[in-house]
Amino acid sequence: MSTTAETSAPSATGTSAPATEQTGPKPRKPRAPKPPAAPKTKQAQLVALMLRRQGATIHEMTSATGWQPHSVRGAISGTLKKKLGLGVTSETVTGRGRVYRLQTGA
Image (cartoon, rainbow, N blue to C red; front, side):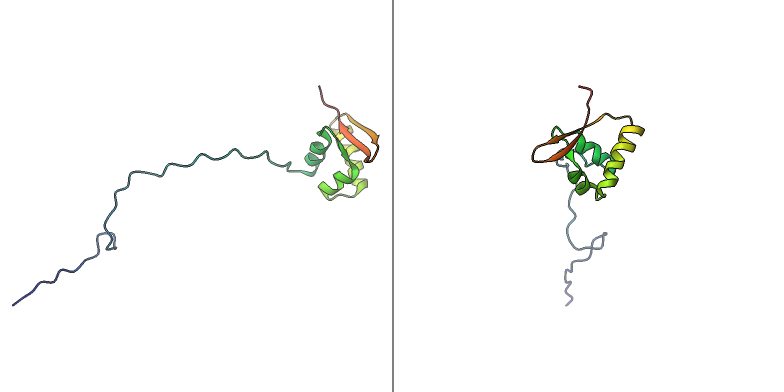
């Protein structure tokens, strides 16, 4: 008497799992819009700080860039004013000290 035992043989892909039908790539979820990127250079950080309505103090600019106060003042006077020709204004504000702003075209 011979009996034949049925064994599960691996499929052509090498696995014994049944093949599944693929309907195509998964649909992607829509991405939320990215927030505006932070300025990449320290000079751009200074410009961004000074363009704010409240302006920026030397202390705020040194905290943002890691520069010494004399380096921030040099960048304002040499790079922003002289080389880039930007209009820089400063005024003393009670409680904050000297605040620097860039003049905008408006």
